[in-house]
Image 1 (cartoon, protein in one colour):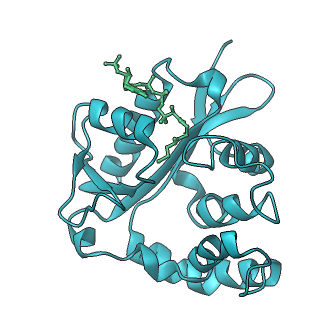
Image 2 (image 1 turned 180 degrees about the vertical axis):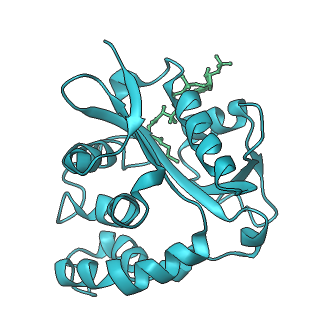
Length: 202
Ligand SMILES: CC(C)(COP(=O)(O)OP(=O)(O)OC[C@H]1O[C@@H](n2cnc3c(N)ncnc32)[C@H](O)[C@@H]1OP(=O)(O)O)[C@@H](O)C(=O)NCCC(=O)NCCS
């Protein structure tokens, strides 16, 4: 399969939603897990594409996109823009009370962008999400996507980025450790938070 990394375009939106869904259960398929199959991407992908599309990079496999890294340069600014511009969109799609108890945490996440603010933000202002469909994993694309985003952030003068991940996603944790991320002070075993400088050799 020939793959090419390129900037996001608006026509990629549905593919990004699909990749987000199919990797949304701590790295495995989340299809059918929530009352809407779009909910997870409306929290972890849609706002990024809408508010900071220039920091979204796609893995193009010819006829579609099958992986991505999406980021924001300044998490505080993103939180403000999310509240002003994305929250009205989200609130029109999802009632505050989730239809299923098991998805209340995700609806809460969608309604509370301030959850993204933590003590390490001054040092690590950017953050990212990265997902590849299973057929693209393990070929070095994850490392290349991280490198691509770090370069774009460096060009914008951003010193470092962070990410949070599900503690049970041990495969992703092994990947981040391998490419050079380290644990931040605010990290806990239940909610790991990792960081990396944008000038790191990845
Ligand atoms: C996590 C993910 C982005 C990694 O991307 P990838 O393309 O599979 O990883 P790469 O092939 O670029 O691997 C880079 C390095 O990490 C190592 N690595 C990757 N996954 C690993 C694993 N599960 N265990 C041990 N090492 C791993 C690779 O061996 C490689 O090391 P090397 O370059 O020294 O050989 C990708 O597997 C994925 O999208 N998974 C599902 C969704 C997900 O969990 N996203 C993250 C949510 S926080």
